[in-house]
Length: 345
Ligand code: SF4
Image 1 (cartoon, protein in one colour):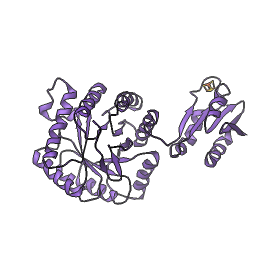
Image 2 (cartoon, rainbow, N blue to C red; image 1 turned 180 degrees about the horizontal axis):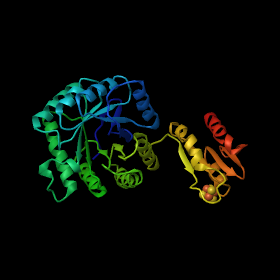
Image 3 (cartoon, protein in one colour; image 1 turned 135 degrees about the horizontal axis):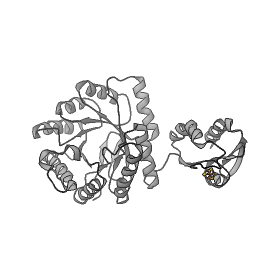
Image 4 (tube, rainbow, N blue to C red; image 1 turned 90 degrees about the vertical axis):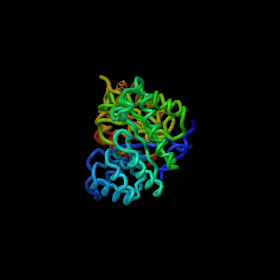
């Protein structure tokens, strides 16, 4: 079913909105200062649309509330166990509450949160995780059906209070269960889905497993917002999600980097160069292709096809812009010359 649109602060999730990117803050949130705000804003420049914070205690709830008054990106309060923390967060302009049906407790506690969210016009994500399913769903032989049943039970509570600003996630560390649960849910409901593989793992397995499951769903039009959960930094999660959505043609903007994998012919330190310029490239929202190549075998060709290219050639590097050679410089001057050409594009 086509998902309904749910407003999460300034970001629309579902409806005709593009698939949005989320990540989660990975440190305790104790105080709000300029350093924290700068880090949050950096995630925005990398392409993060929605940012979630764990709220394990009242101090975190207050800090999140204060932060939400000082940044423009929609902030989400992630609540487990103590419904009163959700109520506290709702005193501030946070953009969404996430509750986990497996550990939020009695129905009346959920109702308290729903009533206040309704009053404050804040959406709720029902975030079901296979690792913390409510007890009665744990014996299901089909994990996908268990995830959907747990979500549906919680939806019933919210709908009984006329609450419809609902986003749902059903995540497992198993890719098949996650895909099947989301497919089943999407065939029955029109609430937008936040999709992801939970506890997907360290960088490489996490990327592979998330890409496998999420691309399957996204190609079927399932999934309105994504998080790639990695045992890595929030920045990496955002860049990974961005790359996935760009590759699937679901998002535009941001520099596409073509780079050679290196071999014995390489006359240019491509990984070293990427270390220097990578951050600058990742923060550029223009829809451009950049080629960073090691030698003259494929370097000139790829560089000519890119908006901006650089390739090793003997003891020099050659810079191409829009298909034409514009500079030949010593490798030590490469980064500065390349970034200058990038600015002028
Ligand atoms: Fe090797 Fe050159 Fe191809 Fe890079 S571009 S992988 S250095 S042949």
